[in-house]
Length: 240
Image 1 (tube, one colour):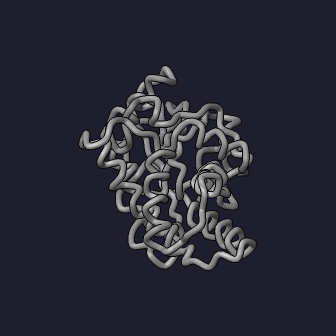
Image 2 (cartoon, helix red, strand yellow; image 1 turned 90 degrees about the vertical axis):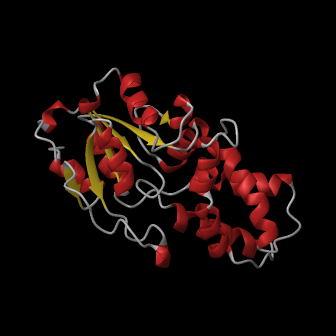
């Protein structure tokens, strides 16, 4: 925990997948209904878990230089094409694959997200700092009613979190010193990387993010600047 006053904070950046939106529940629900309407029987939950499981490894390939800079939509699509074969899902054309891939643009927020962000927006600049690309995050916000002031995607910096260029680049883009920016996330690792760059930190758990496969981030594992129950509680603790 920093000894700097939280009154210095001017902007709050939010991790998005799992922190603001329920990626797993959204995608499983949508694909289950879509498949049932078309007579497609598949292990949609297994596919979604495998899809998310490839998230970090695919970004690591970019980070190591095995791939040129590639936006998350394209990384997701490459993984999806492999997984539909792995899970034995046949008969999908380009339009169907594109629609499934864009499910990440249609994720639903957690129940506290929009109300909490709306309160915080009255006092702070609020934006995602997410590995999602700009169009993904913009479409998600429009679909879910998320009231961002701007879209701060790591695409803008040509780096994926937790590279320091993302946290420092966001602060620079906002015209703020790192200590004037707070990173809010349900992932301790994200906050550790942000803190190492001088940002303030806020944690709240999303214990059902990974469903029965959740193995970490049930509680804060460090004395972050704010530890809250959810985004509405974060707003309360910050005086909103």
